[in-house]
Length: 633
Image 1 (cartoon, rainbow, N blue to C red):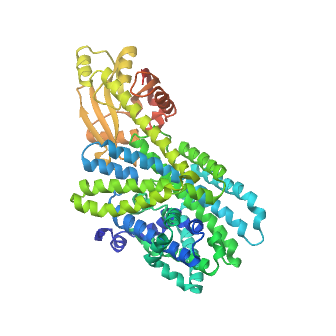
Image 2: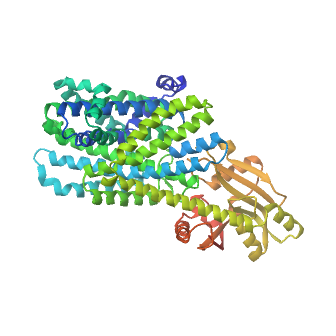
Image 3: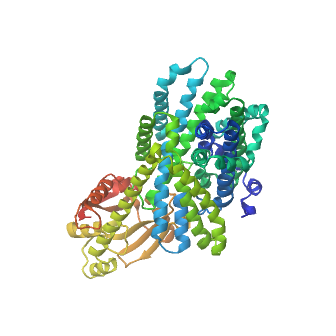
């Protein structure tokens, strides 16, 4: 499949003066995770080659690394998957929304794939900071003049760094984010320099670029070969970021950064580690830190720590972005989402997710205690996410790109086969720690499924027990209650029936405002809605109007700002004499609802801890009136 000329780096560079700035930025954010894999990937892969001749092991592992990076990252993601963007945005949820659009209907299977992919993403969000920072801290043990005396302090040091990282999230990264690209660029250059030094000494390692040596490793011992393959997958963890971050940097800058910086520098370093092992088999115990020259050890170690912190920051920011998408698409309850920059849309902070990640990362440190044990937990969640990406890609290829079945299958089948092979290899690590991200993912799938099911049950009950809005409007026209000046806006998720807050206002206050608006906020299956399509107005009768606000799944609703657009469409009102009526539901568990009792209680817990709609929709608190009602679920 060829890349369209419009997406080529040269074409983009000629049209966008910030192309090279975006390319540098993508080096730091997009490739921060995959860029720290040399710390542990070769070490873990070589650890499974005991009993295999050193030259066969080193050349075989290097061969598998090279072809994994080539087939999965370069061909699958850069050439193919990046084309399946949703109006410029990527990621599992963006792909799910695009697949739903392409099918023209809501598909339960596609929806489930999106939920599972989003849930598994958080597993990577926990493991990446833990394994990266812990690997850097372990490097102090090999530092000149330190040695084993520091080993008891490795875990506390990693914990302190990680806690500090999570504590500063609320301040945003706009001030330090500009340094991510340059620091990571220096990191990649240092990786290449260290690798080149050893390749020159042992140039025979270049033979490992041939697929023959990787295949030969399997032919020699397929059991050990499968175990090696599971660890080799560590070199491509972070590849999903290529797709997830396409909306922030664009396809051209990401492709350019990978092909000119990340890929060559990573491969030179992996070849260098292999060359070192050929010359000194004992270096296989920790090849990355053994290849650092003694005179440069401390500067490289400091740079290593900075690179792991940047990689962790990129994953944490990604978790915030996925959470925002999940909340907007109705997969999770409303959460407090704070903007940490007035100019950069992607700079957000989600306190609940930040706390969850921090607790989870510290739990990983306590449970696994070293990076080798954490490496065993790494891989299963990401390979499963990659399988989901290919399945969604097939749907998009067939329905959105309108490819014939044979062509879509010919494109996706090889990628699916590769991902399933890696998934099978990683399942061997389930008992050694691979269970952790799977358990976490299943827990999040349960939470999402409970929230979706509970909200559907509540919506169905509200629709069944409510009066159609058109009927109520006609009734009030015949028997008009006392009228008061001003505008009343009633927020509801279903504009076809009378909102609970409106019914309570009529029942208890016995008044009707001069102007009444039934206000609905809807999330579209696209990342961002153009301003001209933000507001949709519709009359009910002379007393009531229907206003629908449309937002994309990458946007944060701001009701007062959107209502300002209503004036351009002929709707006149004064925000200072407008009251916003919200219906607050008090939910009680019922043994006869559509869910088991324990799931009812989980849903109630999620509802009680959801963010206040006043804050979520940025409504002025002084203009809000809440009306309560009790409902069983």
